[in-house]
Length: 274
Image (cartoon, rainbow, N blue to C red):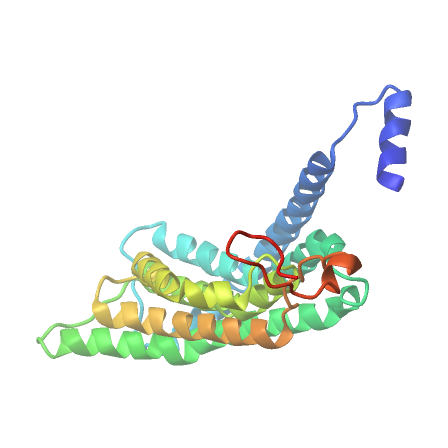
């Protein structure tokens, strides 16, 4: 038992004894530091391409963007740099997430780290692309057309426009990880498909509340535009957990002597009938 021997060796050497929980917390802190450092480096790198990223986000909107305050343009560049930093750091975050949960996995499951990183990174990129090419144009067209029909002229500030895009893109990027995370938790036996299906109504309510908080606007159309795909991803997660999840642990079997004993009829007083 290496954990016990290490603890005894540390106690004999006069070092403070660390419990398993303390070791897990220390490992989590170390991995968070690595993710934070990589995120900062990625943000500095993507800040140099902020103009290109804003131009990419601006494609659904044909008119020019304006800014109302002297600092609005630079804060918009910082926000798109944060978006790019999260996107570039996602493989590192997923790697450390996998390594943190790796001790709870079976030896045969630990070799799936490369496919896990590839699939999870691809899902995040798919979520960002889906939001940018489908959700954002639909939401933008609906709201702009609503104002134009009332004889209003749109003049959108770059800061508000970037906020609008970044919220949608990050939300859908992380939301597309939901089926994979549900499957991973099912493999760890933290969640079961039956439990997720039983609390489906609660999950739908939570999705609606989160969509109301994360939606850049307060209209019902954008709320449903965000909540609908989240609910679909939740259902895909349940299906994936049923197919790829680990079956629940079976209860320990009874002793052999009790298993082989046939049922004996009893009388009304509880005595055996001979």
